[in-house]
Figure (spheres, one colour):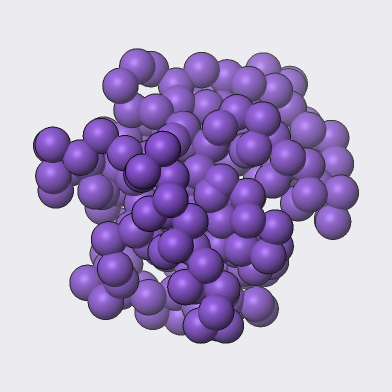
Length: 212
């Protein structure tokens, strides 16, 4: 199961790879404070207090309950127009840069889900670009659309988001994960599929993973 989330310095978005998504700002920008409630192209965001524990970001659950040792790895995603940097981590050790994808559209989205499965990641932490004053931009809308589609595709598949050099893209994804872990997932904007059956599937998958 994989979720997705975005992080600072820009806002972050998070999403469960098996059907939930959350987002935080990316590292190059400042993030807006607090979780929000808003609709996306194919998903919806929920206030964290309204969600059952299995749908919360792993870092937030660990922050609230030190005895909880569940959850898989987190896949950090720095979405760009030409390149998408990836990093992976679990919060126990420092996240590490993974790779840079030069893909777009559906190929990129499917590859992100495949990488999440290969890395045993159950959530995606995705940088959400905002302006210097914390407002969302046209690029923010693009990221939200990607996250919304990832949330639905992940749930349906039952899977556990000037030119820069490739290394800088991957290290931007590392910074996204570092901010996410340091903040215990606070401020993550969580996106869930609209379909109740897909939300239920995420919860069931989370419980099955916990029993393994």
